[in-house]
Picture 1 (spheres, rainbow, N blue to C red):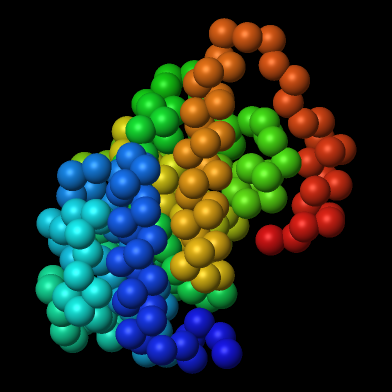
Picture 2 (picture 1 turned 180 degrees about the vertical axis):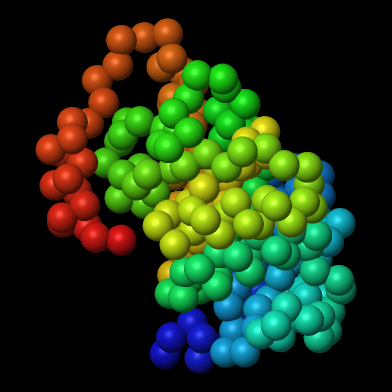
Length: 215
């Protein structure tokens, strides 16, 4: 059975369980970060102002296919980021947005390549993220941010918001969470290696991974 046909109660429980895991491991903090999952006709989204460490499955926001709030607490203020990903990437089953420390730190650097922020340090980063474009800075809630994300979303399932954090789409909730975690670990490695002569994967090695493990 596909995620879209899955039991909504289980999806709510999975969101709460994975959100708590993310919070407990310090990948987000306070009331930052949000998660969404696609339903047959709409989405489930973590509520605005909520902490990922204490998500109540019953209070998770439910939206219809036009983004209208149907039930639960009001959804995250960054709903527009999630919807932009879903609409530009039809296979998307879930979206994760975090303010994870190392990814945010990288997004603040002045000498990164905006077309592909992180180099191919590991095979798993290439397999789970591929290329990571940087979205220019916009104030929180600015609808121009959604437009900028839309421009990149059709070609990239993960983007990094400047001075803000990553937005990652996946075919399932776990795919999106695992890819976000891989991005954060790679950002950490990148910062650790910045003052060292580093051997990255070659273009041939990256191409080979894309051939063997198409996204």
